Amino acid sequence: MFPELLRAGVGTGQAGKAHAAMSGLPHFAPKAKRLIYLFMNGGPSQIDLLDYKPGLEKIYDTDLPASVRNGQRLTTMTSGQTRFPIAPSKYKFKQHGKSGMWFSELLENTAQVADELAIVKSVYTEAINHDPAVTFIQTGNQIPGKPSIGSWLSYGLGSEADNLPSFVVMTPSWSAKRDAQALYQRLWGAGFLPTKHAGVSLRAKGDPVLYINDPPGVDRKGRRDMLDALAKLNQIEYQKVGDPEISTRISQYEMAFAMQASVPDLIDISKESKATLDLYGPDVTTPGTFAHSAIMARRLAERGVRCIELFHREWDHHGDLTRDLPLQCRDVDRACMALVKDLKSRGMLDETLVVWGGEFGRTVYCQGKLERDNYGRDHHPRCFTMWMAGGGVKGGMVHGETDDFSYNIVKDPVHISEINATILHCMGIDHRRLTYKFQGLDQRLTGVEERNVVKNILA
Picture (cartoon, one colour):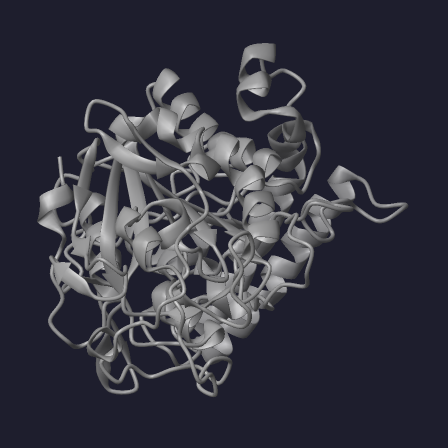
C-alpha cells in the first residue's frame, strides 16, 4: 500500500486517523488551537450595534455632507436617491465592563462579556455587494474558486479529531421576516486544495450528515467489509493513475464510517447540565436555532474539530431595520455570550479563537423613507465592526475609530485580509508562508498585496 493510504487506515478495518499538520507548521507557538467563526451574513448595522454615534441625533434627517460621502461608489438600491438623509440609531447605548465599551441595548447579553472582547471598529473591504463580499472575506478573493479560511486551517494544521472532520459548518435559522441572501457551499469549499479540507455541513433537519445512517439491510460489519473491498479497488486505480484525489476519497469514506459512531454522541445534548442549557437560553434544545448551533460549536471544539463556522443569515436590512434587527439580535445575542462564558468556564477560551462579524457594514443615511421609528440602511464597505475573543486576543479593548457618521475610518484601518492574517497568527501561522502552488502561483489566503497582523489586539 502507499504510505498515505496506510496513514488513513485503509483496508485495516480501522477508522481514518486524524491527518497531521503540514511539515513546519505551526510556524510558531499558537495561542489558539481552534477557531469558532460566528458569521452574520448580510452585513450587520454597526451604527445600531457597536459603533456609538450620539451626535447624529442633532442632525436627524439632514443630508449626509458630500465631503463625507466623497464620491463613494453606491449600490443600485440608493444610487437613484435624490437625498441621503441622516438616520441616527433609535437604540440606546450603555458602557459595559472595566473598559467601558459601548454596546447597543440589542446586545445586552454580549455586553456581559465585554472584558473578553477585542472590538475592531475600523474593518473595511472593497466589495459592495453580498456574494463577492462574503466570498472575499471567506476566501481572500471576490472571485469564487479559492479555498475558505477553514479549509486553509485544515490544510495547514491538520486535525485533532480522528472521528470528525477538521472543518464543520452550520447554517442556523433566522427570525427576521424576510428571505435571506443565498449561501453557497463554495463559501466553505476547499477550492484548489485537496477536497478532504472542505467544510462538512451539519444539518438541522433529518440526518445531521447526509447518509450517516446505513440503509435497511446493511449492518456495521457489512459496511466495514464493503469499505475494505472498495479501498482495495481504489488502491489499484491509484497505482495506475496516481491521482491524489483517490486517496482523499478513500480517507473520506473512512471518516464517514467513523462519523456513523461519533455524530450520534455529538448531537446528544441530554447530558448537558441544566445550568449550561439555561445559559444558552430556551432555543438551545431546538435543532437548527443559533443557540443550538452555538452549543454544538462548543461540543465540536471539545472533540478536536479545527474550525467551526456558523453562518447566520438575513442581516441585510435595506428597509424595516427596526422590525428585523431586534429579531436577528434576539437569535444570537444570548448564545454568543453563552458560548464565550461556556468556553471560559471549561478552560477552553484561552485555546479557542471566537470571531464575530459580517461581510460589510451599513450606511448612516437612510435607504427609502425615513421615520423616527423605522428606517433602512444600504451596504457600506468603507467601515464596519467585528469582534474577537479568546486565544491570542487581548480582551476589553477597542481598536480603530470611525468619523462622526460611522462612514469613514479615521484611525487604524483594518482590511478584511488583515482580519484573516490575524486569525492565522493566533493559530500559529505566518500568513505569508502558508501557500499552495496553483496555476503557477504561490496562492495564499491573504492575497498578494501586503497585509499586516493587527498586533494591537493581540494578548
